[in-house]
Every structure is written in structure tokens, then in C-alpha cells.
Length: 205
Image 1 (cartoon, rainbow, N blue to C red):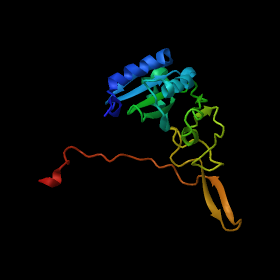
Image 2 (cartoon, rainbow, N blue to C red):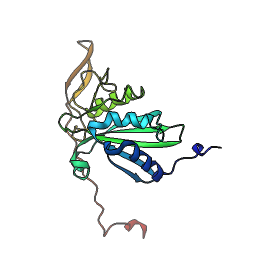
Image 3 (cartoon, helix red, strand yellow):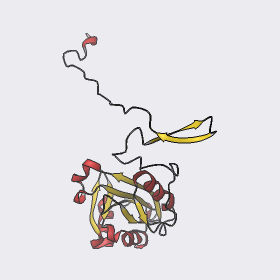
Image 4 (cartoon, rainbow, N blue to C red):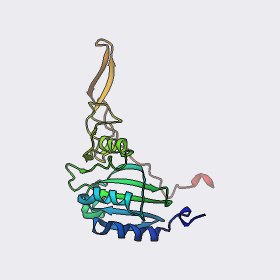
């Protein structure tokens, strides 16, 4: 059995990724035994190409891409940016995994480069992040909604998207078709149940 049959230690992989990306990475960190590289948006495409091709990386497969809306938590993130695109890469040949995170420079119009031409599996993942978070993947040849309807308003995984949505649809018997209309239900306010300390566990005596 060759050395490549064993999983690479996280700290060793971190050093490899740091060497491969150089100043294209904001930082590379290890948490809970997993390696995450946070890269500059302007170097994202080049960084991803390196991660696929560099001898010590060889991440042949892109497993997933998802969006993240840090919303009010963004102050704890790099430069306080709101939206990020997160990719998970797998090297079958070297038995190692890597998470790559890139923050969109503009909160009002979040844009990052598409990696669809590097890994074809990115196609639907990028469309999903566009649909649910509104992240635009520049260079994607077919960037359109994939889960919501064509006339859907907004991006439902954003933290400021209302739980009730903006529109509702129903079947109109007179028109004999599905119609869209403004949401008719009242927003629900959830009040947590409060357990008084003096009554807590009273039924156990």
C-alpha cells in the first residue's frame, strides 16, 4: 500500500495549500481536523485552477458549492462582508479534502467567478447558490434559477427573506390556471415559552 493510500494530516495539507496558493489566499486554517482556505475574490479563479493542478493538491473533484449569508454575523468575518461562496474539493488520488471560501466584495451585488469550466459539477451547484442566495457567478454560461419558479421574487435563503415569502400561488377555477397574488397570510410572531424556575420540575416531586 502506497503512502498516498492514507489520508493526509490536516497540518501537512495546510502547508501544501499555503505553498500552492501563496498570496492568493487570505488565510488557511485548520479547525476540527478540517482545512479551509479563504481566498481573495480577485484571485479565486486562478487559485481554484492551482488547487486542481498543483502536484501536492490534485483536487480532481468538486463535491459541492453552497452560498452563505452571514447577515448580522458578518462583523466577525473577514472585512465584515455578508455573502460567501463555499466549495468542497476532493482529491481521490491523494485522499484529501479541502474547503475553499471566497467572500463576495459587494454586499448589494454579490459576484464571484464561476469555476464551471474547471469542474463541470459546479454547474448546478452555482445555479442553486444563485437561486437561493442571489450570488452571481461571472462566466457561468447558463446561470438561471434551478429550484424556484421563473417568476419567483427574491432569494429565499437570505436571512432577510420573509418566512411567508412575497407571493403565493393558487389554482383559479374561473381562469382555469395557476395565478400568483400577494401573500394573504399574516406574519407569525413566535414567542418562546418561558419556564419559571420556581415551577421547573415541579411535577417530578
